[in-house]
Image 1 (tube, rainbow, N blue to C red):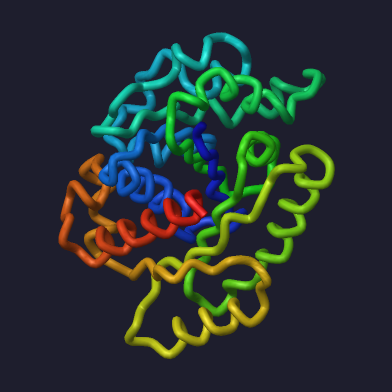
Image 2 (image 1 turned 45 degrees about the vertical axis):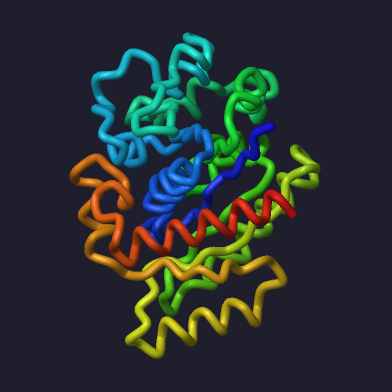
Length: 255
């Protein structure tokens, strides 16, 4: 049975999409069958896998509005081992169009039930806000992975996000767990990065992954080629870090 992980942080620019793309690709490279669900109207995860997001007939928007089945909107094997439910800017209207829909917090969960046993991992890239799409992602997920940028304001907003996760657990999804926190854009040359890591560890009771995702120019370049880092430059520090993170995720599931 597949494990469903929502990748969430209401702050933008923390490496959420980078993590969604590259962790999924790393899991696939380790022989896992992965489905990525892009719930961000910006559709950056979709285009990061080389999908032309504005020319799609069926996306998560049509799925949320019951205009297609989940199998009709899955793009199979966009890279070996990774399939995707794509997104584009149309999704921004979904929240308004779903006003008055009964149990709208569970739309995605109901759909994913049909296919979750077909995959080892389902990764959900959440939008950078705490809205209906994020709530749907969290009601669907088994756990939440939170990327945090190594910067001075890292802890700001984290307590709000953890409060939201706890609210969803209390009211909508009692099985929801905190997968843990992963640090992104880590620069070993600066004291600040190291201080942020120590600061967050001392304030958090949640799991903090050992793997630190470095600030890496190759990671930044890969999306413009529409491929993940392990296909763009498999020997780069960024590719190696996501492979290590995949190992931690897999060992956590096997525990």
